[in-house]
Image 1 (cartoon, helix red, strand yellow):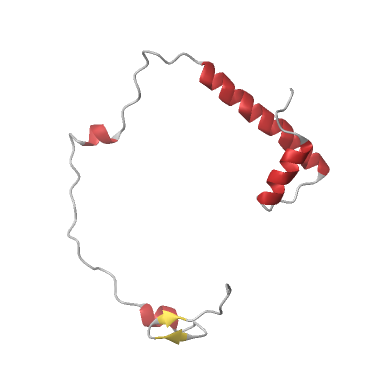
Image 2 (tube, rainbow, N blue to C red):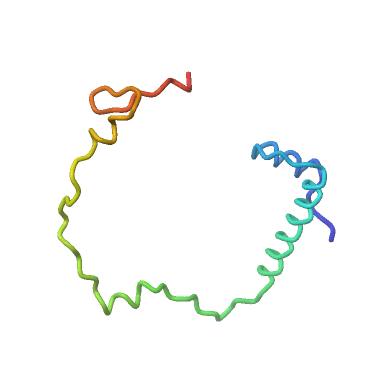
Amino acid sequence: MSSPFTHDDVTRLARLARIALTADETAATTVQLAGILALIETMQAVDTDGVEPLTTPLAALAAYPLRLRDDRVTDDDRRAAFQRPAPSIENGLYLVPKVIE
């Protein structure tokens, strides 16, 4: 199967995605990408004229409306308990080291 991707294309894509690939993995990925593109071409070649789209399952729910519960708070405020093990807190917020300048 001929691939529209070259070894350099896959290597560049892997670098951009920050994925380390060996030479064997790069070759396998090139073949897999070619297979995906071939499948897409096959699917695009299918004549879908006159085919009705599938309906959403939500349409069936219209006949059976959902019972809604009251919109009220049921959990206790546990912020203090969750923040107790945090190394640093100020005004109810977690303080973290600056990572972006």
